[in-house]
Length: 478
Image 1 (tube, rainbow, N blue to C red):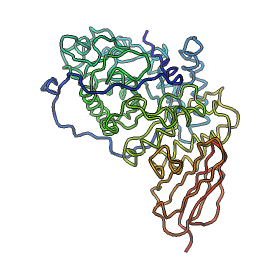
Image 2: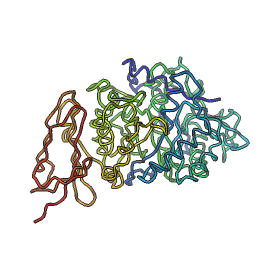
Image 3: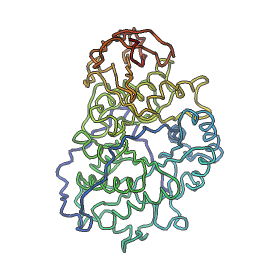
Image 4: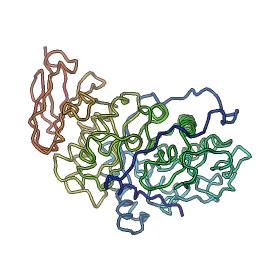
């Protein structure tokens, strides 16, 4: 049974997580790619996509792992959560249930002879797909096209190669850490047959009704670092870029949305931003709370994964590569039940929507606090997501308090401005509209209070600690 652990997040909270090592010195060169796989890459992910709104099993799995109990979600619990999402979140645009780590990920060759995952938490994926479909939802899957789930004797469809031909070969593969082992059994993209295996992965998932894939632990593959004490050989920058190239080709071909998790994002995300729809920009949610939103290792930038340990720092810094038609920044899962105030709950939803990120609900049918559903279902805030809105901070310096003022333009010409207070004391936040490129007065509407506030040439507010004010600006009457 294959089970993925996320205990490495304990190291994050303990401040012991180390940055990934430099990607230089791998010994791997492009001329090692077989000639039959070298061709022009014509695919891209530059078409504007809507950041997903969905529900994840993350909280259930993490809770089981931390309590040292079976993390596999029972079928009855699946049904309760799916029913809850369908009834309470689907009407607001949340259209997907997604798997994660923690639970068993296995292959039954009688179900799929190519070796791809067929069962999650002991349940057939096709059964989970149908359970979701019956409730008007889709299933997203946590898996990685570089992971091996089946016996190494498994034949790669369309080739004369087996899985054994795709995995690490010390006689020819030069890795960063040759004396290490791997947490996962990875395929090596430069091996003949790897491209076909990756293509088959996306073809398979699309065929069973899955068009969203979350691909994890990419820093371990690239450099062998970044996941606490979890081992990795590190297959190098060129192998990593080649893997992303093949993933992009196949995902584009089969119209599957790709979300990359734990990427090093070297060179300002040069490899990731052109080959994936979405990328994680912050460490795991873990136990959540204000720490994950704003305070964990605040202001500390790391080389490699994770660049930042809290959402606010991550969204500010990586805003330099986001925008309509660009890669979507993923702030990981939301656990409203771990936040201590109404202000913090509105803050975390607002931050993610202002940055153009997804909302991935991890609260469950029996853990969301009564009355808190309203934070997930605020129609005026969710309109940003539906519009594919992507905002920017006034300044990109995370140490400057003006990075707590965000703004962006809706497709109809309206502007949205977000005033945030990350601090533990009240703060006045204000911005003149002229600084945002707006001339004259604008009508102001508060998107959380659902009230119109007249016309002005600026917006200001005295904000309580850990609170925000989000307003929509539209043209004033002549």
